[in-house]
Length: 376
Ligand code: TYM
Image 1 (cartoon, rainbow, N blue to C red):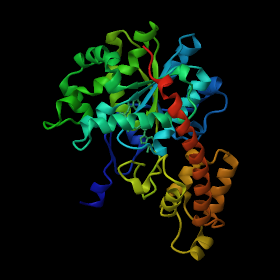
Image 2 (image 1 turned 60 degrees about the horizontal axis):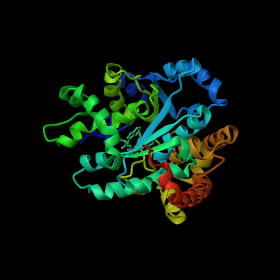
Image 3 (image 1 turned 90 degrees about the vertical axis):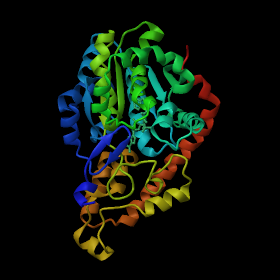
Image 4 (image 1 turned 180 degrees about the vertical axis):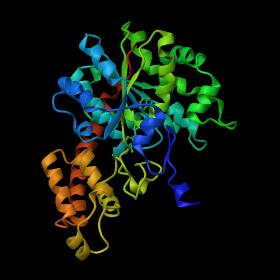
């Protein structure tokens, strides 16, 4: 395999590989960049823009402008996002859930959260359904630990709650041809039948609010860009079924701790899981790829490169809220005034502080889990 093959970009809901070119994804997926003008519109409702938006972690959208226009005219929206429970949650998964919480607080709106144990069972021969279902409940604790309120948060566990989704999924599935699904998702002759139908199940929560309340309002979906193919096919048929097209706001991938690539549960050594103990976090961060030089002497002389450094990106996207302090870290790094060991040490402290709190809240969430289960 040549280096060019290794770097070839693949972004699907089930595989992310190679060097990710986000501009190219906007063009190829046909999404829109988040413009200054749109961000100003958002800011009118949220006050200061959330760190993840201000710093460009969220970079693209579909119909966010339409949703805000409707909101200004008095039509609310609901939020929708989810998790495919194939193992423990890592801090990359938390990224869209953190922004979703911010939007829920600012717009005072409902969240539907889908846990797709069925998806994870179907897409991997090795996965057992009972294990995926069990991870689903485990992963829900991570969502709740972020501070969501049960009154406004409706968790849908697919295999348990399929009765709520099935009629909507059928309406969706009937209007999407196999050839569209194959072109969108890359299905093969060998793809199992469950998987081919499955995208209709991820589409269903976009429309569930009307069924539960009678209100026909759009859904806004914060998620990483890998989930976009689902929304492309759902948007095509939404209006035929009398619904608003679901809108999206897309984030980049939080990188793993290695060189290149997203944080991915299939590479545990370069992922920080929310259940990792402090010494494991320390070990992983200590081995992380940075923009540092071969020797301390060289780095002091010529400086390092924060633009390729995983540690710096974690500060940027999650662990340094103060813009001035972040800028100071960047300039000191470039000037060779701070070495990688110091940044790593600081990051270990921040992550472990965050995880200690998160793990406590996650334990407490066990008592309230049932309150978040979607009400019928
Ligand atoms: P899943 O479990 O693969 O991922 C959960 C959410 O995390 C996002 N994500 C990331 N975001 C930032 N950095 C990363 N490294 C990273 N890795 C994953 C995903 O985009 C996703 O938003 N099929 C879905 C479950 C689902 C869903 C939804 C997701 C059902 N309905 C609606 C989003 C919106 C899945 O397997 O997600």
